[in-house]
Image (cartoon, rainbow, N blue to C red; front, top):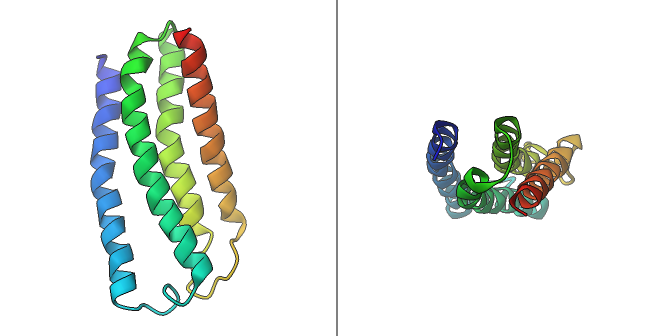
Length: 134
């Protein structure tokens, strides 16, 4: 693997620790019956979705990295694909978490659009990689 791909893998693997910490924080909110979390189904649902998406998208990005190495693409395109795959597990969960950051929020604020940006990043990355693998 190229040094760029190995660095990307290293960064993604380090983020797994932050995802684990986030899972622990969610468990503490549940176990501690934290006001504004347990009694707020919108916040609870979006935070659970953010945590789940972070984990799945990091794993997906790690699985995609060897395919990026095999793609018939220039180094600039490979860098772009790597960035798109890394952006998705950052942007999408941030949108879920930050859109209901205050305990009293009962509907998402405009930061929910970060989830759309994360989805667009994921879509663009997978399409670029797929096309360059054909």
